[in-house]
Length: 585
Image 1: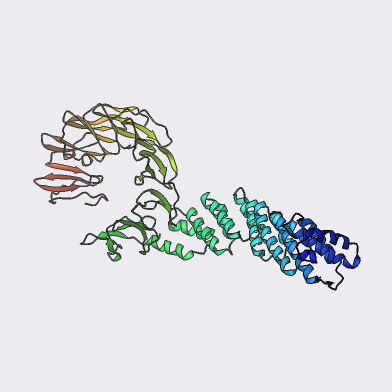
Image 2: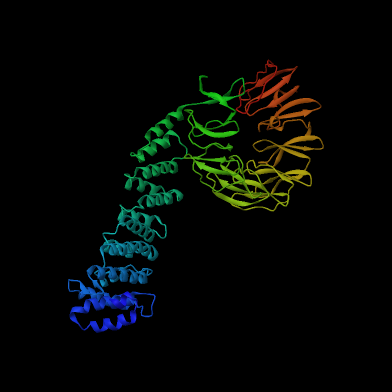
């Protein structure tokens, strides 16, 4: 003890080795050697040797202090040094990533204090968390969960295990994987994530069968099953008429939103008509003239599928016939719904939404209104293409210009020339200065500043040699040359009336023929002829207007209305009249 106090580690070491052979002094000698080897500021430092001798000191302690005139060694001294040496040994292993090394270490140091043991276990528990995250295998994590049931962060381990199981079983992100996961691990903390992922797959695939099975199997997961019901309804119902709605309720008697369907059916019966008040604001009235929706809008479309696009303060939004805003969002512009889809403009891009207000398509720079063929021309990066009413691409953006399609036909522009395009992508060479819209498969074309008529197969119907051509009705065209006009029947490929009548450039060709009757002007005298070349009443008039259903003739500043289907009785009784788009006069 004297040499220890004097830091004479050499003589302490020599003397202690001699004392080891004395049974009564073994514990004190081992303590002295452990003390010497533990000191890291002298040449004899060796922590492994210190560890060896401190264990020997503990095992051979005679249960009473070692007494000398230089000092005493008791159990407190031995166990204090034991903890110090053990703690230093621990520093050599605590960087090791393998948690099991802690168990080995603890088993090799059974006499450490409770405080030190708890500190080492705390390090081990932290190491377990990091280790299972690094290995990232559910079987490894499960092993540590079952082996270390007293782990203070068992909830963290369980979350890690749940996440690993989820990732391992759903690695390909298929519906089958998510279903298997949900059925085998109903209590996994990632259950909601799996439900949403499965639902998203069915939604994106428009999988009605999948949605149908989802609402049945996961009916108790109300948040997700209600989403599935709404999408099932959105994909199953297109026209929103009563027949379709009743059929849906029969097919799905457990549908949780029956009230909404009944409201929709009730609205189908309502007829609402836009009207404008004296201030120019627009609202809706019923057939009795009663105001149903007050005139508070700057503009409004007619109701389509029980929904109107209304505009106020440069903002567009959707309302139903009960004057309820059906989609929370508002837009800079929007078109009416068709089969459950509507194009909207957010101020930067156009895209399609469904009746839930959720985007269903890519973004577009511009969209035409719905065409006769129920599709839309779109613009993207200064080129034009064609998409269907859902916003799905039919023809990619590749044209300089594209007209509205009718009966699967339109025109396109290439190098500033027009050609014929079919919606299946087939096109004829662009060679015209201009092409009109198609009517019954025929279109007016311009080439070298002259006009003609071609068929959709690009074959000529009427040679390109006329000054101007107007479409009148069905297959009838007004053809002008040298300030004279006649009428050409594109179906029969012949002139009904030859080019011999006086043309006025201010004339409205739409009022010159309805396909059965023709307005003929010669030397300021107006005649009305029928399709077989016979003149009506064989007399001339001051003027004539031919509408789809009636003939209006003027004489002495008075107008008469003639119904060609009835015996002709001319009564000049009107001062004037206006033709309306809905055929009212």
